[in-house]
Length: 442
Image 1: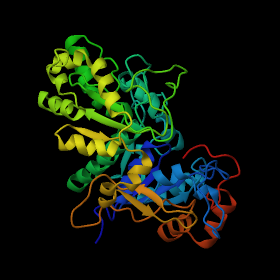
Image 2: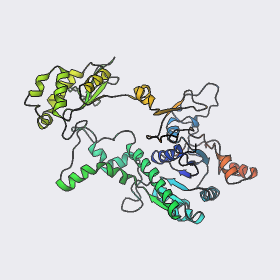
Image 3: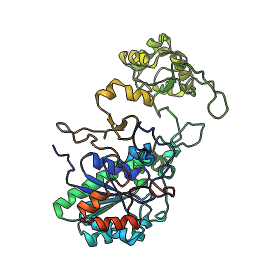
Image 4: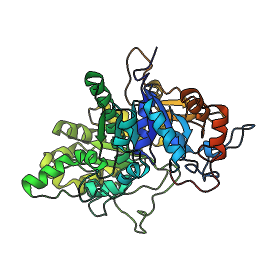
């Protein structure tokens, strides 16, 4: 059965994380995504290449974990767009494509002669999705940034971290993943618009504007109440207890906080290798149940903890008691016990535990994709929703080998003869091996 986006062709002219993630989503759902790479895009000898499968050809540029994770479900075409011949071939390919997605700085596409007006001259109904950091207008239009810089500029870093600590980067490429989802969605909306009207579309998907949507509550608080919200770590503005508590320590002992200072708080630090459990109490009934499970039923009647406001005001003392109780216990057993008692709680899983988790395995969240030269299958994360009755969200193809689709795209799709293809290779317009110089981007 054909996937939902079968028949849609997208030219992926992206780098870093956000753009490649957006186009991978489209590829997972059946779009023909052709990733445009420069001859020097990948390192010839990259650091940290995955272990080579015995007997396989040693091409380390095809075993870069970061690249493969972000570029599944695509084909790779190598074109040097800095050269007139490369740009001409890109435009010929654009004639046969539905959309182009790019995430370079605002000046790049215009400087290359590949901006929206240029694309419209070869295909009037083409769709171009751009993902500038701060948009293509305004005082910051020429600023260049990766996700962490946008985290800082959006206010999200200011809200992330502990009360007595500095602002923090909020997780692993959060901004990029968020922007990728919005870019993929906006491209699909443009395709739908074209089917109804016949019109192409230029979509500007400013990354910072996507991230501002997730700090809306703090923005409203500042505008309506004049308050600047503070960092609260794992705590909650009204609920208490609400935090992550040290559990079984395994073979390692608690140490310092990472900044050279020792910590006395049972919820502040645990050495690497230790376990944690998250507990979040919303109601008085849940707190009574927690106290009962702790063997401290009298705490529910203690004036310091009688009611949500009192618990929140005295949460430091309460956290210390809970942390003393959870310390040394198995996080999974604690989770089952507390949940059975009606207390919201969850074991904190590390990435290895996620791969082995029975629910994650049952849901087929990680698809083990075989690569011809990797020692082990790659656990790609499936798109986070399923289409019932079809395999529309499954990953069918691994990340492309460098220039793996050169001949198919330039020969079969654009109709170049063998001698023309050989001339492009000889002139460095296309290549099947990365340039000797270190690559500049993903």
